Amino acid sequence: MSDCLFCKIIDGSIPSTKIYEDEYVYAFMDIMPLTKGHTLLIPKEHVKNVYEMSEETAANLFKVAPRIANAIKDSFQPAGMNLLNNCEEAAGQSVFHFHLHFIPRYDETDGFKTTWITKEDEFAPEMLKTLADEVIANLNK
Image 1 (tube, helix red, strand yellow):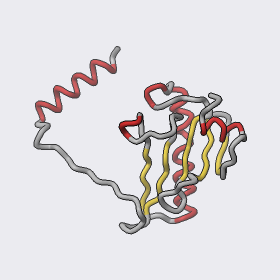
Image 2 (cartoon, helix red, strand yellow):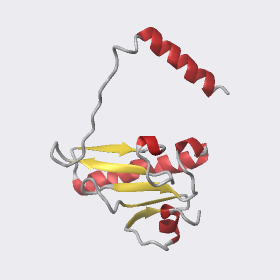
Image 3 (cartoon, rainbow, N blue to C red):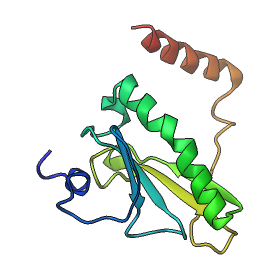
Image 4 (tube, rainbow, N blue to C red):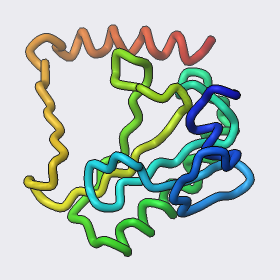
């Protein structure tokens, strides 16, 4: 796609700090890193988000993900790592070309915060079963 930032990175018209490339995917250092080693992995095929991604594209991307994660782990020895994808604007997606963030975590002062406010009181087991049945019905379409 001609106006896509990540497509321009793939075709070389915008520079990047590449760490991996094959026929299907491209990985590079995030220019606005949250922590040391913050890396993005993208499919070379322009696909807006996971909703539009084919199983084949997903397979090609996620078969490389462990290699990228382990290379970051071996390079920087983080205490952990967040893998993150923001899907759609409401979830924080700002570049509309699927990208998977690898965010190495070092300690509570590394600058990246995750907050989970659970709602188990609102979702009793019966409600979870009802919700699961809805998803299952859509899996079988």
